[in-house]
Length: 109
Length: 219
Image (cartoon, rainbow over all chains, first blue to last red; front, side, top):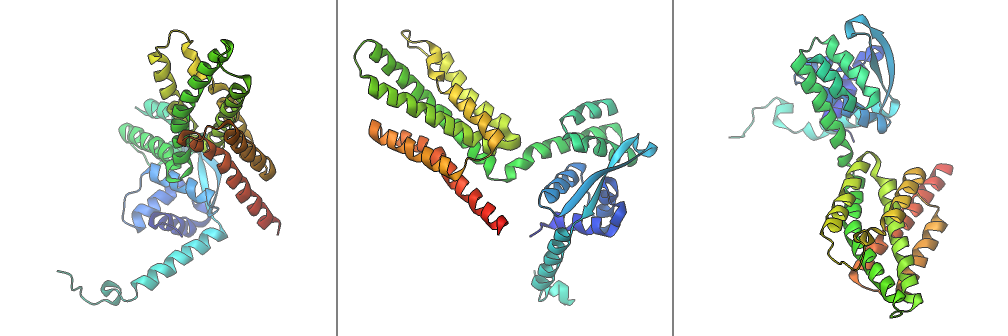
């Protein structure tokens, strides 16, 4: 089972498709999830997910904008997509009766 | 500042180094921010292996094993001196020496095979009690290095552990039974010695698990 940040990373990387790499994924996470993402969190999570077989990475092209340094390209594997789907379904399942999911006002004080 | 960040990036895993510095250049991060991000990544990469149980086991084995084996080495040195004075038989000292070699080798093998990126921590945890013991050694009739007799077989075990990862099931089982039998024959059934047997039986359990996973993969 994926963790919350792992799920966000896999989902953003899958959405970026062929153009998924470190900086683009970081920007995607900050824009779509509305939370800051440190380089440390990003790269250690990419490494962990690659070890679990959920991502595949390789070194891509170098550009002048990047000071001539190569990108670490990312692709979500079939196993990664399956794990993300499982996480999504589990969250949808547990949220079914939650007041915020049904659009009813919360009774919390 | 960016040159400081580049220097700090030496500690980043080699395959991430270019990508990370490139990402930070692309996003136009300031010098301080780049340095902070790189240092943050270094810390996270060093902490990451500790999410697994293996480094905790190897650190415990390295520290506790060193403390116990320091005592075993000292005991062996004292008994060797008694042997040379004719106050003790050959058999008992030979058994003790074989047991020390086996305990040190199996402990080293477990540490080497499981430590991975935290190998340096295991090394430090082994070195601290050794150094402390050597510096505080007070028996003038023996060399202070006598407490380090276990280091060489331990290091050989660790190097072989790094290279081989695990023993075959038959080898591990034979070794564990032989060490246990040797210990029972020697008569040293103290808590300390039972603890030193654990790495040998761990190797059996690990070999069994590897054998089962190989069989599952083959099927």
